[in-house]
Length: 264
Image (tube, rainbow, N blue to C red):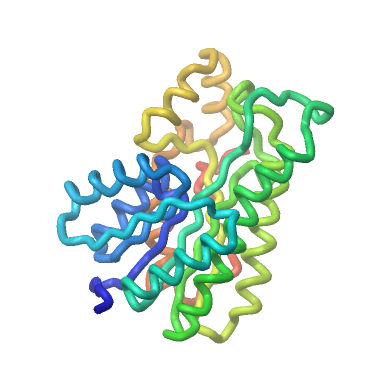
């Protein structure tokens, strides 16, 4: 028998990551049943334990898979449908910027390009493709794709990552995917939006350690580029997601919402 929560069921890709975990906690506290999708099984188990400690009544399904493999993605959404009988929200946080050892265009191979584009763009496309039929059946759904301030030409602290070319290109493409899919799904009850975070430091130590390992000047310059005067938090990103997956956001579709402190 399908399990039901008051607010419905949500799937979060990249659910083992820092932002994914904070979004999962926020949605669980609002009454959503959750499916966490990520390549890293150990990380999924850790987040599932954290959720259990925070929200004991939440139903959680964890699925470890390669989100760029269509057969695996199709099977995962079949499991979601079987377990919950519905899918009210899909939040695509999965992705990454690739290796930090690449410093220039001539060092960027086609293999690295494809890997980063697949991680960010193809994974979101495949998850949308297999989520939409479940949502259409109910005449309701909320899709939130994750873009980045980098897609809009905004900068990040020097030395934080390697080349941003495939990352920026794939995140800009996420915005195009979002806008076109919102048009394609107009009138179905399904909304599609992008969330574009700037320099955000979630609770996860790995992300914070990466930023704090930068020279003090680079950290200061990064903060100085943010008119709000500080970095963002995972909780602030999760709050934006909570709005976009809410019933009240039914007329918000095809948009790109920035959570970046007016980052320049």
